[in-house]
Length: 268
Image 1 (cartoon, one colour):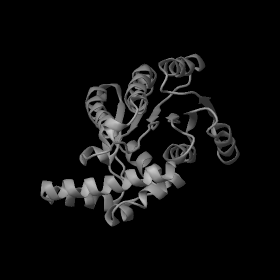
Image 2: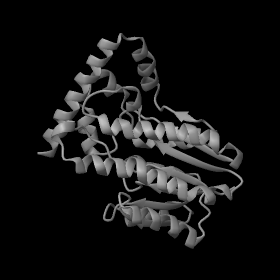
Image 3: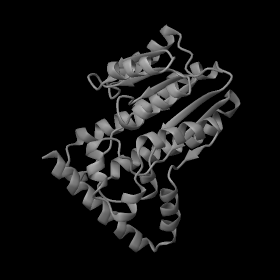
Image 4: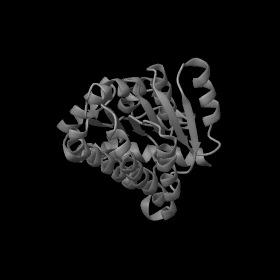
Protein backbone atom coordinates (compact mmCIF):
# COMPACT_ATOMS: atom_id res chain seq x y z
CA UNK A 1 0.00 0.00 0.00
CA UNK A 2 1.07 3.62 -0.51
CA UNK A 3 1.72 5.30 2.81
CA UNK A 4 0.95 8.87 3.88
CA UNK A 5 3.28 10.16 6.58
CA UNK A 6 2.67 12.92 9.11
CA UNK A 7 6.00 14.16 10.47
CA UNK A 8 6.30 16.67 13.31
CA UNK A 9 9.47 18.68 13.82
CA UNK A 10 10.14 18.18 10.12
CA UNK A 11 12.08 21.32 9.21
CA UNK A 12 15.63 20.33 10.17
CA UNK A 13 17.88 17.64 11.58
CA UNK A 14 16.35 14.22 12.10
CA UNK A 15 12.86 15.41 11.12
CA UNK A 16 14.06 16.68 7.74
CA UNK A 17 16.00 13.48 7.14
CA UNK A 18 12.92 11.43 8.03
CA UNK A 19 10.91 13.44 5.49
CA UNK A 20 13.49 12.80 2.78
CA UNK A 21 13.59 9.10 3.62
CA UNK A 22 9.77 8.82 3.52
CA UNK A 23 9.70 10.61 0.16
CA UNK A 24 12.41 8.29 -1.13
CA UNK A 25 10.14 5.38 -0.22
CA UNK A 26 7.29 6.92 -2.20
CA UNK A 27 5.20 8.16 0.73
CA UNK A 28 2.98 11.23 0.56
CA UNK A 29 3.85 13.62 3.39
CA UNK A 30 2.35 16.25 5.71
CA UNK A 31 5.21 18.28 7.19
CA UNK A 32 4.67 20.03 10.53
CA UNK A 33 7.02 22.47 12.22
CA UNK A 34 7.32 25.96 13.65
CA UNK A 35 6.69 28.99 11.39
CA UNK A 36 9.71 30.37 9.53
CA UNK A 37 11.83 27.26 9.94
CA UNK A 38 12.05 26.23 6.30
CA UNK A 39 8.99 24.11 5.51
CA UNK A 40 8.16 25.85 2.18
CA UNK A 41 11.75 25.27 1.05
CA UNK A 42 11.62 21.63 2.15
CA UNK A 43 8.34 21.12 0.29
CA UNK A 44 9.93 22.56 -2.84
CA UNK A 45 12.93 20.26 -2.48
CA UNK A 46 10.65 17.23 -2.13
CA UNK A 47 8.44 18.33 -5.03
CA UNK A 48 11.46 18.71 -7.30
CA UNK A 49 13.08 15.40 -6.45
CA UNK A 50 10.29 12.93 -5.68
CA UNK A 51 6.97 12.04 -7.25
CA UNK A 52 4.97 12.36 -4.02
CA UNK A 53 2.29 14.68 -2.65
CA UNK A 54 3.58 17.12 -0.01
CA UNK A 55 1.68 19.52 2.23
CA UNK A 56 2.85 21.45 5.28
CA UNK A 57 1.59 23.23 8.38
CA UNK A 58 3.56 25.90 10.22
CA UNK A 59 2.30 25.77 13.81
CA UNK A 60 3.61 25.79 17.39
CA UNK A 61 2.76 22.44 18.96
CA UNK A 62 3.39 23.73 22.49
CA UNK A 63 -0.04 25.36 22.10
CA UNK A 64 -2.98 22.99 22.69
CA UNK A 65 -5.07 24.78 20.07
CA UNK A 66 -2.42 24.14 17.45
CA UNK A 67 -2.50 20.42 18.22
CA UNK A 68 -6.29 20.41 17.87
CA UNK A 69 -5.95 22.36 14.62
CA UNK A 70 -3.52 19.80 13.20
CA UNK A 71 -5.85 16.93 14.03
CA UNK A 72 -8.86 18.67 12.49
CA UNK A 73 -6.81 19.73 9.47
CA UNK A 74 -5.92 16.11 8.70
CA UNK A 75 -9.54 15.03 9.09
CA UNK A 76 -10.95 17.91 7.02
CA UNK A 77 -8.52 17.15 4.19
CA UNK A 78 -9.27 13.43 4.56
CA UNK A 79 -5.59 12.63 4.48
CA UNK A 80 -5.23 8.84 4.93
CA UNK A 81 -2.36 9.08 7.41
CA UNK A 82 -0.79 5.64 7.84
CA UNK A 83 2.63 6.63 9.21
CA UNK A 84 2.69 8.99 12.20
CA UNK A 85 6.17 10.19 13.16
CA UNK A 86 6.24 12.10 16.44
CA UNK A 87 9.66 13.69 16.11
CA UNK A 88 9.05 17.20 17.46
CA UNK A 89 10.80 17.77 20.74
CA UNK A 90 13.07 20.10 22.66
CA UNK A 91 15.99 19.29 24.93
CA UNK A 92 18.90 21.01 26.58
CA UNK A 93 21.07 20.92 29.67
CA UNK A 94 19.93 22.98 32.65
CA UNK A 95 20.56 23.40 36.36
CA UNK A 96 17.06 22.73 37.65
CA UNK A 97 16.86 25.28 40.45
CA UNK A 98 18.52 28.08 38.49
CA UNK A 99 16.48 27.82 35.28
CA UNK A 100 13.24 29.65 34.53
CA UNK A 101 10.40 27.12 34.78
CA UNK A 102 9.07 28.29 31.41
CA UNK A 103 11.88 26.31 29.77
CA UNK A 104 10.77 23.09 31.46
CA UNK A 105 7.10 23.82 30.86
CA UNK A 106 7.72 24.14 27.11
CA UNK A 107 9.69 20.88 27.18
CA UNK A 108 6.84 19.04 28.91
CA UNK A 109 4.20 20.60 26.64
CA UNK A 110 5.99 19.58 23.45
CA UNK A 111 7.69 16.32 24.38
CA UNK A 112 4.78 14.84 26.32
CA UNK A 113 1.47 16.65 25.87
CA UNK A 114 1.65 17.44 22.16
CA UNK A 115 2.86 13.94 21.31
CA UNK A 116 0.07 12.38 23.35
CA UNK A 117 -2.64 14.66 21.94
CA UNK A 118 -1.58 14.12 18.33
CA UNK A 119 -1.31 10.36 18.76
CA UNK A 120 -4.74 10.23 20.40
CA UNK A 121 -6.26 12.36 17.64
CA UNK A 122 -4.75 10.20 14.88
CA UNK A 123 -5.67 6.74 16.21
CA UNK A 124 -8.98 6.49 14.35
CA UNK A 125 -7.37 7.77 11.15
CA UNK A 126 -4.53 5.24 11.43
CA UNK A 127 -6.96 2.42 12.22
CA UNK A 128 -8.74 2.86 8.88
CA UNK A 129 -5.73 1.48 7.01
CA UNK A 130 -4.84 -2.17 6.55
CA UNK A 131 -1.45 -1.41 8.15
CA UNK A 132 -0.28 1.72 9.96
CA UNK A 133 2.78 2.77 11.91
CA UNK A 134 3.61 5.12 14.77
CA UNK A 135 7.24 6.09 15.31
CA UNK A 136 7.90 8.02 18.52
CA UNK A 137 11.31 9.58 19.14
CA UNK A 138 12.64 8.99 22.64
CA UNK A 139 16.33 8.95 23.56
CA UNK A 140 19.10 6.79 25.00
CA UNK A 141 19.15 9.30 27.88
CA UNK A 142 16.36 7.29 29.53
CA UNK A 143 18.96 4.66 30.47
CA UNK A 144 21.52 7.15 31.81
CA UNK A 145 19.99 9.29 34.56
CA UNK A 146 22.15 12.20 35.55
CA UNK A 147 22.31 15.92 36.39
CA UNK A 148 21.28 18.74 34.05
CA UNK A 149 19.00 16.53 31.94
CA UNK A 150 16.43 15.78 34.65
CA UNK A 151 13.26 17.07 32.91
CA UNK A 152 14.37 16.18 29.39
CA UNK A 153 15.19 12.61 30.44
CA UNK A 154 11.87 12.33 32.26
CA UNK A 155 9.91 13.42 29.18
CA UNK A 156 11.77 10.91 27.03
CA UNK A 157 11.10 8.19 29.62
CA UNK A 158 7.39 8.99 29.30
CA UNK A 159 7.62 8.53 25.53
CA UNK A 160 9.34 5.16 25.96
CA UNK A 161 6.77 3.78 28.43
CA UNK A 162 3.86 5.25 26.47
CA UNK A 163 5.09 3.69 23.23
CA UNK A 164 5.78 0.26 24.68
CA UNK A 165 2.37 0.12 26.33
CA UNK A 166 0.52 1.45 23.29
CA UNK A 167 2.27 -1.11 21.11
CA UNK A 168 0.56 -3.90 23.03
CA UNK A 169 -2.80 -2.13 23.08
CA UNK A 170 -2.97 -1.39 19.34
CA UNK A 171 -1.85 -4.71 17.92
CA UNK A 172 -5.43 -5.77 17.16
CA UNK A 173 -5.90 -2.54 15.16
CA UNK A 174 -2.92 -3.37 12.87
CA UNK A 175 -1.03 -0.33 14.14
CA UNK A 176 2.67 -0.96 14.73
CA UNK A 177 4.11 1.28 17.45
CA UNK A 178 7.88 1.77 17.53
CA UNK A 179 10.03 3.89 19.83
CA UNK A 180 13.36 5.26 18.64
CA UNK A 181 16.11 5.70 21.25
CA UNK A 182 19.06 7.41 19.56
CA UNK A 183 22.25 8.53 21.21
CA UNK A 184 23.92 11.74 20.09
CA UNK A 185 22.98 13.07 16.66
CA UNK A 186 24.77 15.87 14.81
CA UNK A 187 21.41 17.30 13.74
CA UNK A 188 22.78 20.82 13.17
CA UNK A 189 25.95 22.86 13.66
CA UNK A 190 25.11 23.76 17.25
CA UNK A 191 24.49 20.12 18.22
CA UNK A 192 27.71 19.07 16.47
CA UNK A 193 29.64 21.55 18.60
CA UNK A 194 27.94 20.42 21.79
CA UNK A 195 28.45 16.72 20.98
CA UNK A 196 32.11 17.43 20.35
CA UNK A 197 32.44 18.20 24.08
CA UNK A 198 31.35 14.70 25.12
CA UNK A 199 33.79 12.04 26.28
CA UNK A 200 35.63 10.08 23.59
CA UNK A 201 33.29 7.08 23.72
CA UNK A 202 30.27 9.25 23.07
CA UNK A 203 32.04 11.32 20.42
CA UNK A 204 32.74 8.26 18.28
CA UNK A 205 29.17 7.02 18.75
CA UNK A 206 27.52 10.20 17.46
CA UNK A 207 25.47 9.60 14.31
CA UNK A 208 24.22 11.74 11.45
CA UNK A 209 20.47 12.26 10.97
CA UNK A 210 20.44 10.71 7.49
CA UNK A 211 21.65 7.33 8.74
CA UNK A 212 19.34 7.38 11.78
CA UNK A 213 16.34 8.21 9.57
CA UNK A 214 17.00 5.45 7.04
CA UNK A 215 17.59 2.84 9.74
CA UNK A 216 14.53 3.93 11.76
CA UNK A 217 12.06 3.83 8.88
CA UNK A 218 13.36 0.45 7.74
CA UNK A 219 13.15 -1.14 11.19
CA UNK A 220 9.74 0.40 11.97
CA UNK A 221 8.26 -1.05 8.80
CA UNK A 222 9.73 -4.43 9.71
CA UNK A 223 7.84 -4.33 13.02
CA UNK A 224 10.63 -3.63 15.49
CA UNK A 225 9.31 -2.19 18.76
CA UNK A 226 12.46 -0.52 20.10
CA UNK A 227 15.18 0.92 17.89
CA UNK A 228 18.67 1.82 19.13
CA UNK A 229 20.63 2.97 16.06
CA UNK A 230 24.40 2.60 15.85
CA UNK A 231 26.64 -0.38 16.68
CA UNK A 232 28.86 1.64 18.99
CA UNK A 233 25.84 3.00 20.89
CA UNK A 234 24.56 -0.54 21.42
CA UNK A 235 27.98 -1.73 22.62
CA UNK A 236 28.26 1.28 24.92
CA UNK A 237 24.80 0.53 26.34
CA UNK A 238 25.69 -3.11 27.06
CA UNK A 239 29.11 -2.21 28.50
CA UNK A 240 27.63 0.46 30.78
CA UNK A 241 25.48 -2.16 32.52
CA UNK A 242 28.64 -3.95 33.64
CA UNK A 243 30.12 -0.88 35.32
CA UNK A 244 29.78 -0.27 39.08
CA UNK A 245 26.99 2.26 39.71
CA UNK A 246 29.32 4.75 41.39
CA UNK A 247 31.72 4.80 38.43
CA UNK A 248 28.86 4.86 35.93
CA UNK A 249 27.26 7.83 37.69
CA UNK A 250 30.62 9.65 37.75
CA UNK A 251 31.03 9.20 33.98
CA UNK A 252 27.52 10.51 33.30
CA UNK A 253 27.95 13.50 35.62
CA UNK A 254 31.33 14.36 34.07
CA UNK A 255 29.92 14.15 30.56
CA UNK A 256 26.79 16.16 31.36
CA UNK A 257 28.88 18.84 33.07
CA UNK A 258 30.87 19.25 29.85
CA UNK A 259 27.61 19.46 27.88
CA UNK A 260 26.08 22.19 30.04
CA UNK A 261 29.30 24.24 29.88
CA UNK A 262 29.39 23.88 26.11
CA UNK A 263 25.72 24.85 25.79
CA UNK A 264 26.23 27.91 27.98
CA UNK A 265 29.29 28.98 26.00
CA UNK A 266 27.47 28.70 22.68
CA UNK A 267 24.47 30.69 23.95
CA UNK A 268 26.61 33.68 24.95
